[in-house]
Image 1: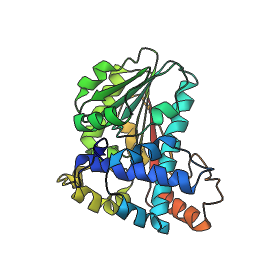
Image 2 (image 1 turned 90 degrees about the vertical axis):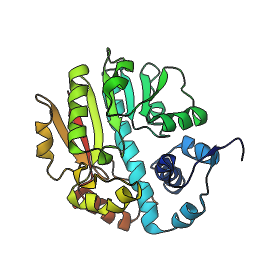
Image 3 (image 1 turned 135 degrees about the vertical axis):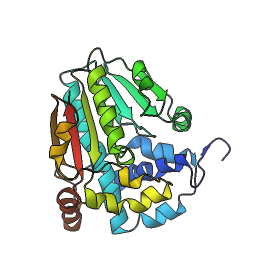
Image 4 (image 1 turned 120 degrees about the vertical axis):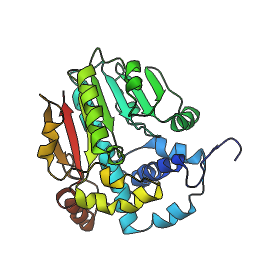
Length: 276
């Protein structure tokens, strides 16, 4: 175990485990819908007790949670590839990257990939998946705009954040969006949000991370409010679960589809896109 990366219970690094494990599980359970070879490889490199996650993974609801994580990644990949189709040499910027490999999954051979996260997360990433050709890992708080100075957006840029904006306050999210718009005209920002019910359902997660500003954290009940964030920006939204793909996999059950519709329409899980 000495050559593995140790993940301490209750640490910031542990926040990486559930989405990583979810992607690994989804690739195993729904292989025709989602593939992620890196997730299983990285899990095998971690010094972490997966016993409880392995137990939970047998439940229908936990598997649906893994499906949620996978659909979010597929949605992000769709947006990245769509942008690269017209900006093939663009910067692809994973904000709050954790151990996610979405940038590499969308690599067209000419884009530049940037992964941004807190220093301890980037340190773990460097050990498990060192930056490759045309790729840079940036250790920084997203709320400190200094990291943007390392991103070359001269040939376009798409910024994406999966499961990150929930932990920003509305004010922080607005400042971040406005800063990106000012620095990178013609770029795209993609992130996911939930409505008020979704935020309440996430309350225990916020508390487990000791977040005292839970009430201030971002949720979006009406997408129309997003139009006021950045003047002159085109804003569009799609359902998180069924807005991009129809979840075409024989392992996706009717119950999964029922839950997916609830997520999109009641919990208001959405993918938000800003075109600056």
